[in-house]
Image (cartoon, rainbow, N blue to C red):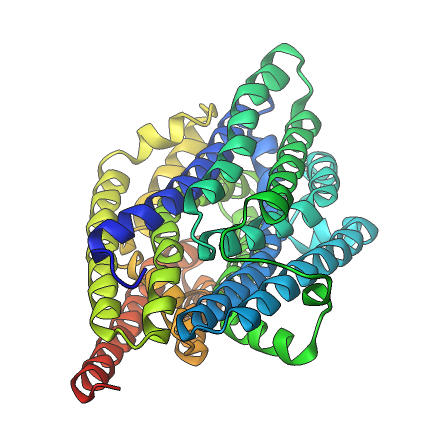
Length: 451
């Protein structure tokens, strides 16, 4: 990682991470399409109710996985392999313990959770079935996400990609059979997702037992240590906060759309169904820059630890350029073909399509600025500067869009929730750009001084 050409290294590490995220996002999108066609709008709404819980799973996996991987790569770059292994072992233990705890809490409090997440009485039976089954897979989902970051940090991005691909491809093959042949509805699709998570978690465990490269774990490496947990959590906070912000935002959006939708011609269920479909499109779009940022994380961390600052700058510049070009292309697709995108979810109700088309165009109007945020949010923890990564992660989901989605509807009704999207994307894009530019100047000074 310290000698290969930056462009080639980025292809080696970023492409597997991007493919992993895209395949998982595509699976979630196809799962939503199958539910729409097999069950209808209420099936889509049910997965939307469960979405905040799935983002909590991602947030926990990123908190421990990204934090552990960043510390691991920084210690490797410094030449301290024993400390690197200690961080890896602690990370795996924390993933297992935390996953089991969150899964248990979700199952115990499933009824109040789905109401808090914005369910209506009509959606409740579907949401309860789907969410309770998904909760069984929480420990495996958290472990897989966190372990994937460590596997990439260990220099095996392709294996990390294969872990994600196997579970997702299994679901892609099995889900149509479940939906249209066996007709098991939301329960069958939820169990398919959970079994896929179990499989990928098992493959991750096998890697650390038999395939690891630089990671060599002893029993004492797995004993959780407070000082290591603090450092792991500190560098993992930015991506975690970003995902938690998505979860909180999802809850706020669901409840806002349920309330203001009831006051509009659309009712509550139509906006809730639209959120579910468009959220999956948004996740598919964000899979690319998120995978790009996570793929670059080991390169940033190793080279910053080794004081090869020119390589850090080259990697960041290229990542920002690629993420921005991709975001511009997605913006064009969302603006030109919104109705065609929404039709694939199998809901042909004219009212639903009218609202969904407008929602996609308005809410995603500034989406061309969104790509640099996950790249920046991953970059700063990778070089040990979690505070800046935290501010970037907080910017869109917490500081901007959350208050906007609560305040603007007071003046503009349901439309206010739509306007919150482009305003927050613009503000968050400015914050990310500012932090990137100022950090590049600091790195240039370090490079010139030879530190």
